[in-house]
Length: 209
Image 1 (cartoon, rainbow, N blue to C red):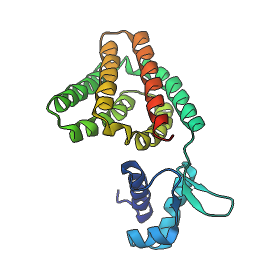
Image 2 (tube, one colour; image 1 turned 90 degrees about the vertical axis):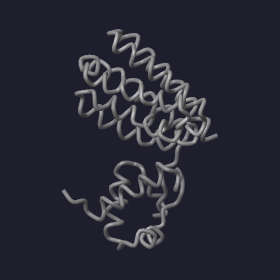
Image 3 (tube, rainbow, N blue to C red; image 1 turned 180 degrees about the vertical axis):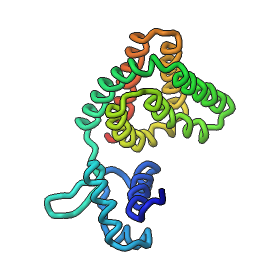
């Protein structure tokens, strides 16, 4: 199905946030975006409305718009939600051996890229990890919630992932989690994932200090 103009604008704004062209807390001026994207105000407003519904864009009391602000409290809340929902998700993933194998193959390729110092491609594959994990689950609504928060966290993580040491540390944590799942150690995998998310939370919080 062909995407509408508003859908394309919606994805462009989200991608701008993901790659760092705009940042959390930045103001959104309709006329600037209309000129930048060479679009009319109607599809732009439709895209902005959709982003408002997803809480990615906030409308201030004075009517002005901005990309959502991120606070330490919001990060704590997002990661608590992830810890709870991913724990539930792992019960479903543990039954999907082929899904686990796909994640494992992604990690093997990521390690090869790290070893050959192809950091750009390693980071790209690294960011696919959560998507593969969520795809391996059969839980529709939990995954929908997690994908929303994963987008926000991915946008926040871009600064920390500039560090090669951080990429390697997180990769090792991912590898441990999936290896435990492959070995049938579900509860240990859940605990390893919980610790991984707590580590990731502290890293992300440092990027907004």
